[in-house]
Image 1 (spheres, rainbow, N blue to C red):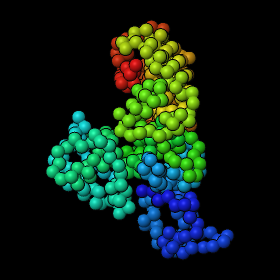
Image 2 (cartoon, one colour):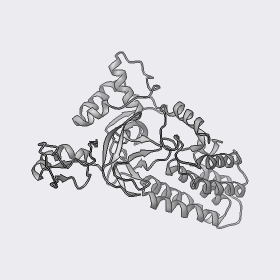
Image 3 (cartoon, one colour):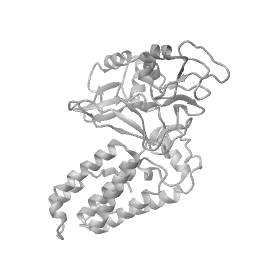
Image 4 (cartoon, helix red, strand yellow):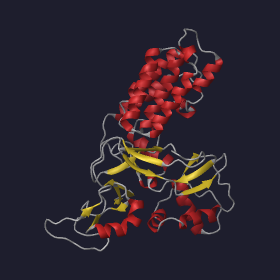
Length: 384
């Protein structure tokens, strides 16, 4: 877990280990990697490395009035920079419906918690819970509380099976409708299939030292409408918290008109499309409007580009197909998120097998249509 916030941002007056203080112009050593902790010398730094190594990330945990805990940058972070990588610390198998399958899951959960480093274990118990996670009939309230902490912050991942995984550092990042960071899965390297993918947190904007690190918890800005008051109510209902980000506080103007335009364009899409050129044209406009958004996660832009690319392929429109691929490639280069790059590589492979059909002027057959459209997220396309 990250080190705790100290004031001033880098406490150069006190050694973390021996508490030695300095005066005047004298300064202490600052960890060159994370900038979040100081020492009086190499001896104290080496003595603390066994503990600090697990915490050595360029962010610090801070309490925010009215919001609870979150993360702040310990140094300046540039757009596209990886902030930290986060391996899952707790794993529980679930079935196809997302229900925990191990009858001894509480024992497994507690064993995994107990095996965490002491600071990480303490961090787990300081997590907050949502109100709707208590869906299991447990006999002891302490068990319920421990389980709810896990259920409130874990997510389902496919990894040689289906599991709920908890990434503890990612769980500390607060939401903002206009985030400055984004998280995504990393592709395992030199690992056997079936092992969990770690997560990465990357800056999608330049982040200044002391600035809060935020991510967006939703992938569809249309879901919450274009009226700020109604959006705050919908976020509270769907995500379980009162959003106090700059957008919901009215500090990011002009987004309401953009979201309204996006909703109107989606309403023109045909739920059972057959006129590929018409649909591709609408998706081209959706992409243009989506790129104007300052709110939401970068993957929302990728989802729009994905749909444009597939419909442009079916419409045999080389210009729109090139537009989608060029913009997608640029998005991957700007954010450097592995998940976006992997998605781009996957769709390239999907389209290669139909390259001969695309080069013709004949309309696509059923088999090609099914193959090209199968990966478009249904809830995204039909959420109009």
